[in-house]
Image 1 (cartoon, one colour):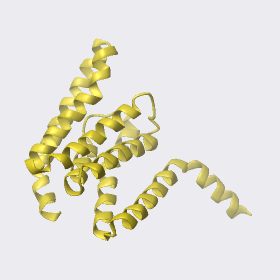
Image 2 (image 1 turned 60 degrees about the vertical axis):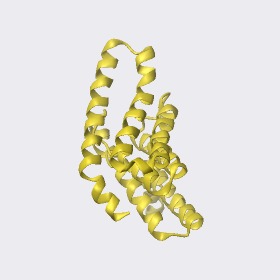
Image 3 (image 1 turned 90 degrees about the horizontal axis):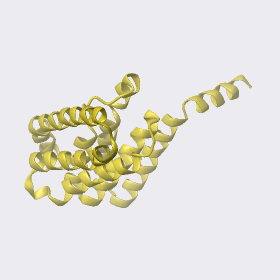
Image 4 (image 1 turned 90 degrees about the vertical axis):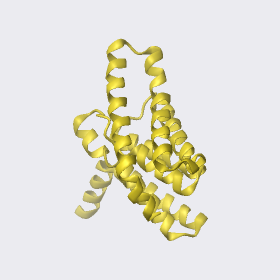
Length: 187
């Protein structure tokens, strides 16, 4: 009887994490069924986990400081597996991150589309090379995510978002220049 109560309490307190874990299992099963390739499935799951990793510090800080791996992982997924996979990966990863952070709001859909576009760009323009397409996808996704802020936000929000976007672009530029050649060699 106590075990049942403990299990019920655990599942009610960790509902978000269980949702994310269930989503990973479902996505992995679907990828494996569709592609038939275990390596692709494992790579995409690892990329997903890397993408949502900053959720840990963002929950404590209650803010983004522009250092995250979402665009990097999305670009790698799109570059390696095509524009469709890149779009879906980016949108689903961002949604999962927002669920884990409890930050689903009015901008979630726009951010999902912006991240999906980053993955699509990476797959569609993969012939440009991973570094160039990564920087291009980062800049485009940031522009798409910041448009509403510049249309309706006050000056303080605009300045804050410019600072975060600048850090984000610089961090991703560093990632794509230093880490992506290693990743590209593994794909």
